[in-house]
Length: 357
Image 1 (tube, rainbow, N blue to C red):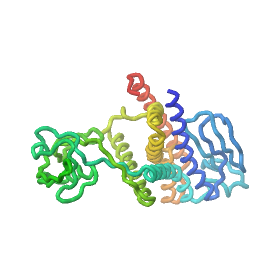
Image 2 (spheres, rainbow, N blue to C red):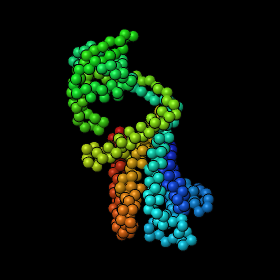
Image 3 (tube, rainbow, N blue to C red):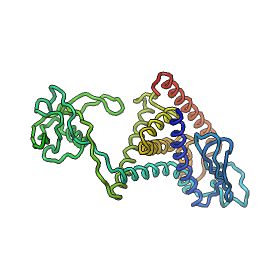
């Protein structure tokens, strides 16, 4: 339990710091005054005031915030501080300041993935056969456990994912599959069959398959800095795309909301990753950082995405959204967030009682 709590605080602290740092740096770049930069909510524990900014650590470690001069549209700003007021800056500057938080979370993921790929290399799953299903096309053709698939239709195969995509893209056409078996290269003609299966989200799909499972063997490919950076961008994009799809499916009802987790689930997962090693914990931070970025960009008032929505409307209409409309929208947004918090805590506690967490 102690490991889980400590890992949770570390993960949340890093994520919140980077998120708020994005807002802070962009605000200062555009000359907006920052009154408070806080890690945590509630009473101030420790801190230091530099200029007009109070850098503080607060009592409740479940978030953080940057309080800017003139942040609220109806805020009364000292005439001497108008030049530092957020509200009085051009709308496009306000958009960049708000968007900087989620952007910095994505940037954190890119930095982490870059470090992982640069220092540990790219882990690749070998196209090595672990088992062959009896009666399957692979079994009928003569493939065996331990065979290493090296080419399909004379196209080299470097990893398991590439191999499965080639097979699925065959549309049932016979394939010439070359394998390495005990130092000897053998060739087989195999016709994939259409099989009913499930995708990552538990949805029923059909794929062309030959009836083999992977052995779990891997190898590491060393990357130079340019390759590591490119791979970090690809990995961040893939995870971001997956998060967007998951959120869309949650909203549409294609995925059960029971799968949603909150602080307890994150703490459990963070603790598990910490026990598995510092590398696992760092990679976990990257995944959660992307998650935080996407959630914050949802067009819900109170979140960054809600503020961006208002500012984009202002940019198009060339006048701010009516203050009353914003107030009502903020109240609705706050209600939605409270419901979501209650729901994720309920899910977490239910899973904890059932022994899942």
